[in-house]
Image (cartoon, rainbow over all chains, first blue to last red; front, side):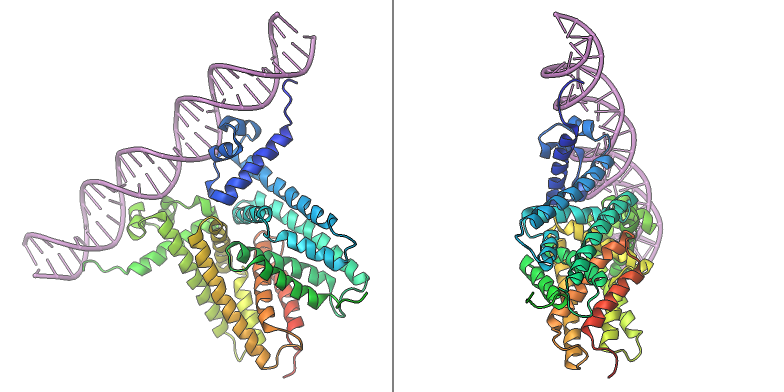
Length: 201
Length: 201
DNA sequence: ACCGTTATCATGCGATCGCATTACAAAAAC
DNA sequence: GTTTTTGTAATGCGATCGCATGATAACGGT
């Protein structure tokens, strides 16, 4: 084998350019030429790593999920002796567009969501991502319930999706400037207050 | 003045074609030619009522809000001697894509939401729409609180946005097929159960 | 050292886009 | 009845799109 470039790395690099274009110019403005220019390469190079535009976008969507998961794991790992509530709150905050990285991911995510309504392949990828995160969230809530951290009468199998979809519903208002990240987090905390027992171990 | 066509009606008719194209072909596929074909007119007619594509889409977004409000008012008017909870639940259900009309509106809405991240004019329109609905929702919850229908310790100014954004967060999963409308409504009811007092006047 | 493979780039092609222009039919104004 | 304004349609234009093709440089295998 000649040359020595890492194919996957190159594809991820180009994918980052795709994210930048989507979040700054919009999903419909994504063209092979724009992506190439954003990545600082020629159009031919983009074609070399992605035979078609569809494959490029599909790879970008899968890579997006990995990026979010990486940021999630980093956020959780940064906690020192966290309670279940701390873990759940941190995971929730990662989903909100509070920093530039989060905002970029949110823009890309909503763009693919819109596209998924007419592209079943995207819908399947998003369904899978939703399902995985929900599973983890439910597991976290169940563990919190097992440890007795939840209030009486609180069903973890209900609270997990409620909190998760509440978070998803807050992404839009933050993106369009109706809510500030702090407003959103205040709402999240209010919901957590009603689900978790007050302080005291 | 010659001729006798109703300009606004024509624009709304064309806008319906825009909705159909967005929800079946996707936002990026919207072209003047597609809209004209969907509406059964020529491209020149579309141009006659909308000088530019941007104006057409912007009008479509404003008309979308009117359509949702009309459906909302119809749903509320259909209730017989409703409690506050009935009103709030019905208004919530209207936001979910449970029937073809609701699904079309949800597809269009998410498409404009994605576009709004790079088009401030759309963002402003959506912000305004969000704000209005939230205001009404808060007023409903406050009235419910005044009537003593809420549980002790429940803040209507918190519950209104929580329920609304939870609903918004459920739209996506329904659209991509992760959740059924019934699953979503079950979650909504669970949230309402925790906010409203159990039966008995 | 030579060859083959690969990465990268530049260019061309057919299709489609938004928009401008033009032509024509119909109804109100006179 | 003529004129004028408006609704509708057809067509053309420059730009841009995704994709295919060919050229060039660089590195690995032998």
